[in-house]
Image (cartoon, rainbow, N blue to C red; front, side, top):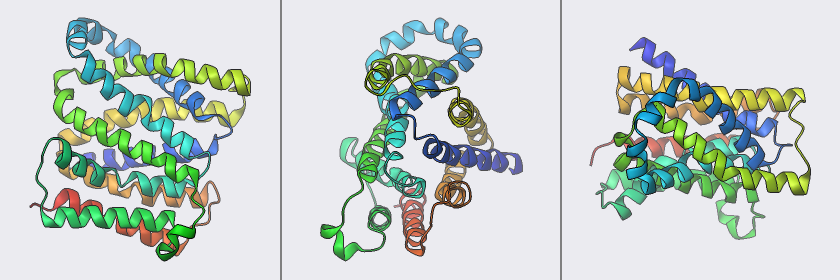
Length: 292
């Protein structure tokens, strides 16, 4: 129990570091960050997962369509949307908006695969969305029409929808594939998909300088810790704690990220943002942990 809890705290730290690092190196364009992160993760996974991926190549081909859409939604574009969002908005807003994902996933499950929701779950969905709007509007909900919307917060809608779709596909198909082999193939496909987008950035913005200290350190961190280490720790924690207990720790993501944004990035954190984060986390708890 204690070891599983330690693993999940490390997972949350690494995932909050994903947001903070993405903000710290946002001089690099988003497709470039995502491309090199996934390329590094692919190279790290290659020696430990290649044999399993090759052994199960027929399985990947047989289920290529759902696997491809899982890859696009969860691996290729989810973090790309996050890095794009961080070009315009704060790490705090991204962290809070990311925690809306469980509520949106449950709504999509009700719409697409007809899962039934109880009144407390619907209340949780509403509270989560209210909290997200509160953060985006900085507490001025009555003046939403007059607010100059931040494009970064709008881009985060793409990340939220991407991961919600990925979650539904994972529930239906991921059990078919060996975990590490699936991650290796997903990274390989994502690198190929992102290459033309990254090349377009290099064509218009020039080749990125990855030799500078912050850029190199940031890409190394993103490729190693959120992409590989956190996933392995999460899988182990789920084995030790169970899926429900492990998922509770993810509600700490905005807490760690807000603290890191204040200390590391020097972001000003308002009481209204903290209140909005509280609304979102309370809504996530109602949505995911109370029975119908």
